[in-house]
Length: 344
Image 1 (spheres, helix red, strand yellow):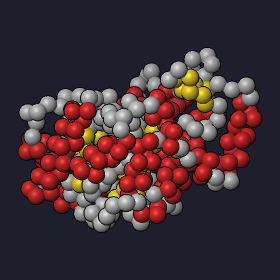
Image 2 (tube, helix red, strand yellow):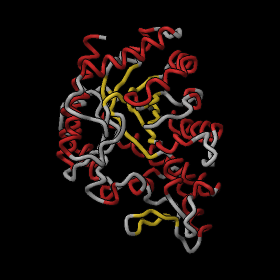
Image 3 (cartoon, helix red, strand yellow):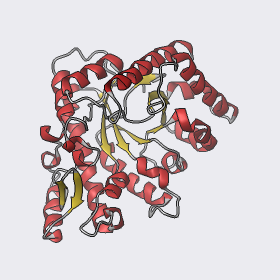
Image 4 (spheres, one colour):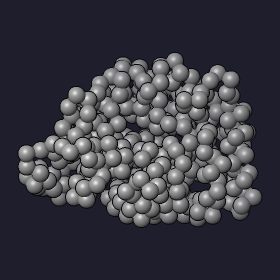
């Protein structure tokens, strides 16, 4: 693996309606590790759940909400599993109607010099977040339906595989992120998901993707039990909100040490999103990361290893912000990347 030290990427969503303008921003501010933009303000079909819902069994998008609604659940599942078992990636594609940003990004890569690109990043909404947000006819989240949950895990894995195959032609190393804000609730008495559930689901997901040679990342923009991610064999990158939760994250030093030694990467979500303001600087954000590194070094982790396996990103997606603020965050991200690569 190359020395990642300070390379920057984004989470996924941007607040633009113009797909070409969104791609312009990405290639300008994160040229070494670009990602395709999710554009929820452009179309309801580009929302975090709807975007990955095409041809998943029984899902209907109505009035902006994604629901499980079918006259024949067994028939829908039978059709789904026929296509899944056949490995029919085209059936599980993310069509241009649901991904103008993906389409524009792919078309642009066909036209530009790719020599400066180290990785191409793609993303899928993670199954726990996805299934917690989709309800059945009784208003109950399908997360509670074991049969549907298993189907959605498989369907989302096919959405990820389709992306990896789609971008394969460019000959770049690939990163696939699963966006899982729901994981902040794991361990709560109000959450029907435990640590072992997460490990089991992501072991299955990563097994399906590893044959493609992609690095697999998990983005969680709140605090959680980070050990369940460090201890899942197929996870390569952990992306956390370093601006707000660094002090809690470094408490998992022993787990992180083992994670890094087996090849893991930490993506520090150091540029704040909701808390962003113009007084923040690359120097201040780099110093905050350095303070976290210092703690981990004191707890026995090799500093050089930490630096070589260090990516940065915004703390969360930018899709709900205004355009000026989103561009300010990307600009600060780019400047912080340069500063880290020169000084840490």
